Length: 345
Picture 1 (tube, rainbow, N blue to C red):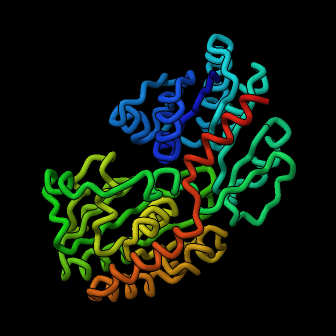
Picture 2 (picture 1 turned 135 degrees about the horizontal axis):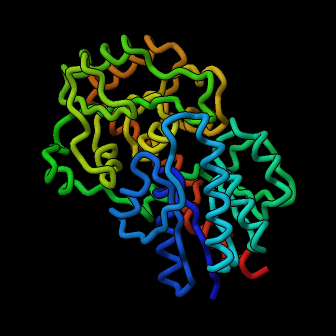
């Protein structure tokens, strides 16, 4: 049996890796998880019952990132000298890749953000497998492996997810009535430098106009602005995908949540300055018709209102989602197979 270390530093990574963590542990492999206090990362791990060791806490300023990386890297090397993993699994992370190199472990990295190509290429000599979807335009050479479908299918493939309507009712959401979900991000990550999300005016218009069709639930990294007469998301973070799956409309400047909502068959509108420099994932999702992206936020608002008022839109989206999934992988299966292949080399 293999010894596997997952490094989880962001809430999205919890969802990405949680099924593989369980599948490998259930198969008898040794599995440990290290975490980072960033947003709700540790809360999600706790909610899913995944034991983990916190190695660092995200600082309040970007200038603290390098010092945090240094501290985290030293702690991870000490952790892995004790645990002696065969494989360290992470997203593109200098600390995880360096810890693998320092302790003799293999490195398996999952990557879905083409805006971090420079960092990825710098780390490539120390990575044993770099895994991306087939949509990536960049070829990373010998370590590169591709799966069909975006990484969010690790947890939203029909093999892995079915919406829990009763859980929504427990939190006061009627899944049989139309509602909208809005998600606004802070654009504070290192790959977001120079990018902008939806403006305050666009957010106000969305809330005001979508409220005519039903409740509007808002999730915002920087908190809901006081001038928005909207309800906060009423479900705990572990139930956010249930909420997205049953929504009538989702509007967001978050790439991750746009992908998630589209994969769940929910009419989805994505907007922000980054749509003018398109990522290949969204070219494919756009061609499939499950995520509509607009650089012009005025057009994005108009389209969201149009979809909210179209009773046939949810059924159309489900059909388009089903067609997209016909050629897509269960990414968790791909992940587990890749990790065990590398561990055995």
